[in-house]
Image (cartoon, rainbow, N blue to C red; front, top):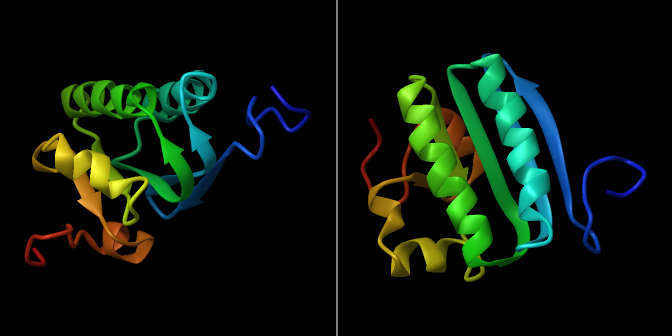
Length: 128
């Protein structure tokens, strides 16, 4: 990990931010096999606190590997068991495209912006 305790790869970081009842994790850089364990740690801590909503904001993720996707799929499963709403902000070719290609956007709540995730308007779905 770097000195901030947030990452291990060039420019990778996870920054938690409470926004009301929601916990937002802002992820920056490459989410791959080297950095996924850092995200797992932050997600484990987030789920242990049991907020009603956890948002993973991947707006600034430049690369998303299968390791990163696996972390989010497993976290979705754990969050669902704990009755926590997991929301993922991903709207770029490096992030939302892999989710759509694997049809994971049908399982994981995917949003184009943080504002949409906080307001619950899912990508490709009408507002609720």
